[in-house]
Structures are given as C-alpha cells and as structure tokens.
Amino acid sequence: MQHLLRKVSFPTRRQVTFTLLGILGGEFSGSATATESNIGTASPEAQAWLAEWISKRSRAPGNPLKIARFGDPVYYLVEPIQWFPDARQSDRFKAVEAPAGFVTDLASIPRIFWSVLPTNGDYVYAAVIHDYLYWAQYTTKDEADKILDLCMDDFGIGAVTRATIIGGVSVFGQRAWDANKEARESGQSRLLKKFPDNASVKWTEWRNNVDAF
Image (tube, rainbow, N blue to C red; front, side, top):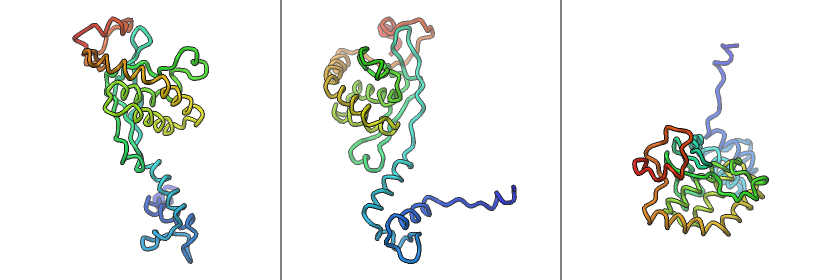
C-alpha cells in the first residue's frame, strides 16, 4: 500500500485548468483536455466560469478572528484580521487589514433585530472589517459597505441576509460614519497599544487611560 501511495501523482493547477476548459468549452477536437495553444478557443462562458472558479479558490483567507472582551460588551482584536479582493475585484478594491488592538462592538445591529441577526453571527468577521473601515475612513462609505458585502459573500452568507445588512448600513450607517469622523478629529482613538490585564475593566473606563493608546 505504501509503495502504491508513493506512485500517486496529483494534477497541477495548470493541468486542472486545461482539463476543465476542455470539458466546458466543447470546442476542442479529439480530447477533453485543453492545451496552451488552443486554450483561448474555449467559449466565453467556459472561460468566465473557470476564471471565477480559480479566483475563489486562489484567494488566501485572512487570519482567524481572535478577540478579547472588556467588562462591558465591547471587544478588541488580539491579532490583526484581513480581507483580500479576488482577481476581479483588485482593480477597484485594495486589501484591508484591521490591526491588533482595534476596538469594536462586532456587528452594530439594533437590539430589536438580535433574534434574527445576532451580533455574533457568521458575518461577524466581515462586520469587524467593516467597522474598522468606518473608523479609519481611508475608503468612501460606499466602498466600505461594498467590501462588507463581498466579505460576507466570501463567508457564504446568504443573499437575503446580506441584502438585509447592507440595506441597514445604507440607511443607518451614515450616522456612525459621521460620528466616527467627529471622534477621530477630536483626538479619540480605537487602536489600543496596551491591553487591559483585568477582565472586569470596562471600555468606558479604559478609553480614558491615555497610556493605552
């Protein structure tokens, strides 16, 4: 068995690409496997499908979400997290990194909706990325909202849930955007340099600690 396993040869991504194009294109004679010389003759639909398939599987995921909690329901990143655009998105969007120490309330969802959209739902990673963009504001608000939608899609969040959340930030997000801008301009920070060593410390207390920023 071990001898047989050593003989196994797995196809490269290039070989998989050509084979899929051959199968999907339907325009290669004599073989279902494409070659470099005839790869461009695959149907546009086949090439588009394959481009999307490869793009989704070649994008590196960000770091796992590792957070700590203050005594009140406010959190901070223990390690940075990222979002990366795929090949089709990279001409419009840049990679995002929310740094360690960023303070967040996770998904800013009104309490009345918590039974349907809990603040710690599967979209929480995307929500923290979005929260950071709303604080840093080196993109426009519309770009931040679009990245939220793309990141939720990366996590397999359904279209209805995504549309509900995006609709909410489109309607109510401007207030948070403006409040964050005012807070930053007044000298406030949400980027910790020093983490609390007592689990009972509340954010309302720690944010007044000038040594923490």
